Amino acid sequence: MLNSRWFLQAEEQRRAWLERAKGTLVVGEIIQSTGFSVSPHRHSRSQLLHARSGVVLVRTVFGHWLVPAGHAIWIPAGVEHAVEMLADVRLQSVYVLPEAIEGLPTALRVISMTALMRSLLEEVVQLPHESRPTGRNALLYNLILHEIPRLPALPLGLPFPVDKRLVGLCRRFLAAPSSRVTIDAWARELGMSRRTFTRKFQQETGVSLSLWRQQASLFAALPRLTDGESVTNVALDLGYESVAAFTTMFKRMLGASPRSYLRVPPALPPSAPR
Image (tube, rainbow, N blue to C red):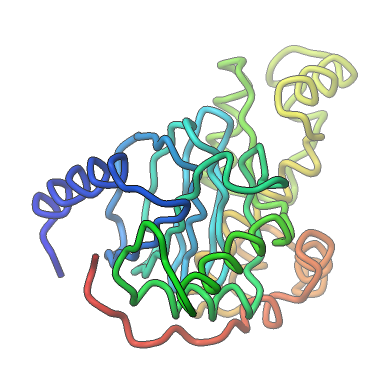
């Protein structure tokens, strides 16, 4: 595996090249190990960051965004973000000019990758960059561009409040998630009435504490499940009284049971970093 210092130097060079690159789309790939992080940065292009394998955590001022294997995150142009590898990863990125096509998302979102999009990226990531692709390559690039607005969003973002007291509660929950946390307990800890706390939390995060807690539980669960840990162990560690209760929450949030949700096509043998 490449050492961190070399990777950081290469990353800076890659960003500089990306800013100079011509063409509507730029597609690339990197491979990195668990625990490595990329410091806060931004691009003049929007970025579709696809976790072909592994799990990554993307941090922004708008919140934290978990990207499990087989999914992607859309990062609009100009949004500062940092990336942490929660497992060994193979990441594919599509960098898109903001005005490339109508209908591109305007906000950060985690999105589900279709089989078609995964196949398109596997084809294009092996190609040398072309500012004006022709023939079959042009068709591939154009289809990627048209598919991006069609990819469905997923509730894997975790907005953070501004109030430091609320931030402290949220960070403690992330460190030790539990299904037993209640609104009344958090309200009492901050010396607020239930109504005042509920209103403030909703105003600062845009979601209820109940929904935020479920999203945070998914943040804790997905990396462990992706790593092969049993659903039973994860559910009980998160404070759920039964696997069925955890599975019900998981299906309500992501539309499938844990086992079905993580059943994504296996990654192809990784190529060298580009």
